[in-house]
Length: 411
Ligand SMILES: [Mg+2]
Image 1 (tube, helix red, strand yellow):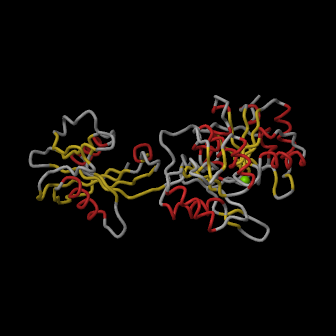
Image 2 (cartoon, rainbow, N blue to C red):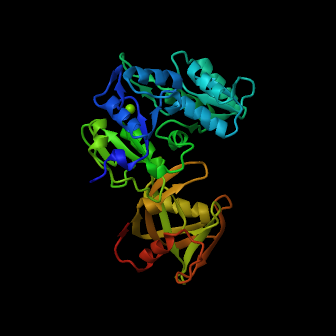
Image 3 (tube, rainbow, N blue to C red):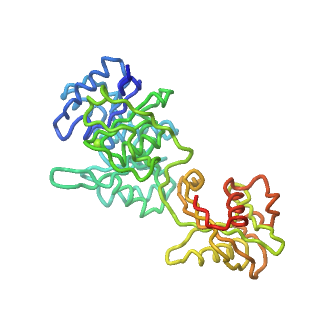
């Protein structure tokens, strides 16, 4: 017998709105489907990004629909944020948002205060004002950790869209220049908190109706993601993190479909994609210019980012001048490199960027070789047959492509 999704996993993480209910109505097969999983002793969690209600309130609503759920099985953005803060050792926090958010913080043993709090938790409710944004801004300015409950810019109401916590988080982000830790979907933290206490991520599956939050968040957390929808969305690539591993029309599909579990690729999902430039600069002896990058103490070709209003050739001339003091001539384009396994970089700031890098063969035109102390620890020409061991993994190939290739390499 071919196993069904219901048999393939032990833990089921359900999104609520659009999966279990829509407005006040349970969706077809949702209550039956969940109760069937309970009968099979599956571990179930219900996840919502709404930072306003308490877990108790969400549980009551589900019980009214006929799902025998316990408060402990509910994961709201407010609860997950409070639980995350407790895990981080935070004991005092200021809160922007609902009474439900304050309750969840207190239940994790966190004192809600505006007297020098360790953290500021930014959510939203109907009463949120300019004074709240100013209060959060001042606390962060004085060193409090900045935490957002969830990143949603807006949520639907019968009268039209209403600003979500993300709108307030971004207001505080703009006024402080600080980057928040955000907990709700599609951030992986929400799923990590939902799975706290379980050890096997492979045994868990996420079921949601939103590719950009439920499915992306599942995959960022290393989990299989199943979309409840009438048809499959179109994927940008086979490894598009927003692409579901399976699509079902309703939860009855859990008992008739199978899924090939998500296989985590070797890179993090990038927040941004940027055009980059790289230079293979040869001297008269045919040696290649390398610089030792300050961030990882690795040798690398000079590289950089194309800035707004700049042509790629201008970008590489500027980057090389800034990083090495040399003026160069661009001889030809030798490669365009974009494969995410090589071209996605995660920085200590938490930023993850996918670069599409244009690499050029160049020669020295003038200037004096000198490492820019902010970017490079050292700079020197190296024999292309005897490159240093600690070199950025893809750069030996870029050098070979430039020195030996006759066509532009596209990889
Ligand atoms: Mg939903």
